[in-house]
Image 1 (tube, rainbow, N blue to C red):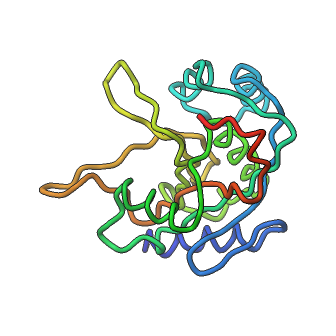
Image 2 (image 1 turned 135 degrees about the vertical axis):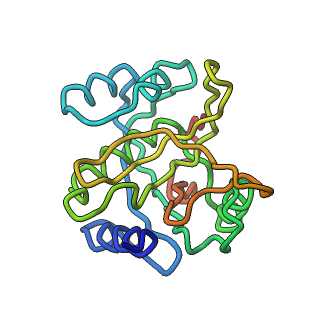
Length: 199
């Protein structure tokens, strides 16, 4: 099975859902903040029996998690195709986002995006390890292993999970992201910047 083809198919399925818009390199949708603390998000995920990694539950209790309330964010997901093949480093992805006027999302937006995508039930149509959407917030240091993590949404055959991600290190090359992974930012022009508290 062609993983990149299936990942692209996943993005097509998302874009065909109401409230989602797509062009050749990006898909956009909107999420609205609830004012929930990290602890409240954790309680919600447990109640709904959503799949969330333990490390992420710990991240949500950090002081860096700063909730906003009733702010609607325009989320912009850069498709893997928008990044030049072989140049899918974090630096290049951030540069591409900057050229489009996009900004790094807060950790809170990872929760909002995950919750939004739950309703699509794409896991019934996808294969494991396909169509990951990485939330490009500022990386969080895991002091236990001294690694920096990002939060992302993973679609699998069984469910949609909130997982942790980091670049892989190919031999003799810079750290890279995998083909078929897509990268979520937000458009500040569609949000009241006076209310933003980006982490």
